[in-house]
Amino acid sequence: MSANNGSYNSDELDAPEWLSPQFMKEVLDEHLKLPDLKVIDAKFTPASAKGDHYASVMFRAVVEYETTGSTGSSTISLIIKTMPEADGLKKDMLSESHVFKTEIAMYTEVLPKFEKILREAGDEITFCTPCIYHRLKPRQIMVFEDLLPKGYSVLRRDANVEELQVALSKLAKWHAVSFKLLKENPEQFDHLKYDLTTIPNMMEQEFMTKSLENFLNMLGVEESLKPFQKYFEPMRGKLNKRYVDAVREYRENRQADTYYVVCHGDFHLRNLMFRGLDCMLLDFQMSHVGSMIYDITYAIYMLFDGEVQRNNKDELIYYYFQTFLKTLQKIGYMDKLPSLIEFRRQMFKNRSLDFLMLTAFQPIIMHMRKGGDAGEIVEDEKSTIQIYHQKEYIDNLKILLPRMLHLGYFESLDM
Image (cartoon, rainbow, N blue to C red; front, side, top):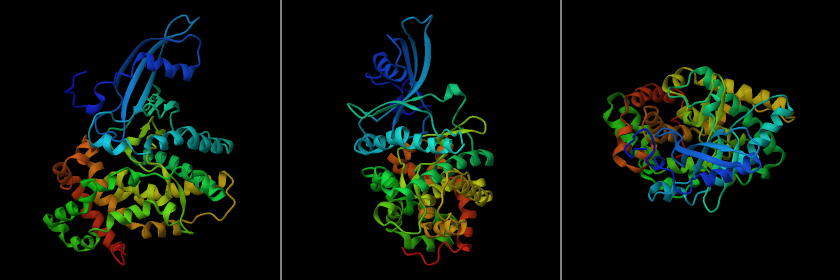
């Protein structure tokens, strides 16, 4: 494959030496448990398009194999996910993180448990493709069944309202099961204590530390947005800490009235694969226990496009919350049900999440939707500045910031 191929992440153009037919035999022996399995051929290609993900390296393996007594060969398509090996910022940030331990636990322990509870209640749900092989040493690796041959694909356009309802329905059911389990035994998910803010040096990266400054500079050159500078200026030096405090609240400052769940942690469009009106969830590296407000606020700014965010946000939040309540009842939750009023109150209380998502993350996701690479933003200050001047982003702010003002988002902020 040409090293100049710009459609894929550069660190996924060439498979590492250890990714070999011999390794695939080890994987298939563990997965299929067939006698005398022999790998005839294994072809490796990048598993996703450039910009689809950042915190891993992924390859697709199409493996031809045969076994004793078989009348011919068989073929299986698998996805291999591993840590970055090339020297650079990505490797430095992720090599000492807990993202693979977290994701392995989600695939092998947590999500199967959630699915079992829902199926016992009559809901034949599947959250994700199975993880058929995993190791942490000598290198961190996960192998999955490939969803592409089963008809699932990543959307290369914005999701419509019906597709968003499907995605939010799965998230709501996941949240409901974890909410009940946390009430029954709060310690059972204590190992899910790592999130985006705990990745080494993540919060010290310039795309995070300078996000509010870049945002304020953009407001200063957009005449219709200049009046909003005065509301964001007091957040200087404080917003990122408020974000960290909100994400880590369950572990460090647990509140009696807050609705806590196992959060997905990175619920955006590239972490979903659709087949018609069904979807599979992907990428649980940032999953952690926290307020359910985190996943919903993240979805508003990272999953919804600008039009949906402006016109269908409340409808979709209501749909999500009603699914959450119905699922709690279905799985036998006997305590007082959460209320939409209290949920909305918690959203407003945690509006620092809105400000962080709006000023740091939404410009990146809008750049990615146009085929941009998140890695370029993380690693290049000039690219980071440019994304604040995207027309789609500015047009969205012209509607969202007045709406925030009218809803009282800028009043009594303890920054």
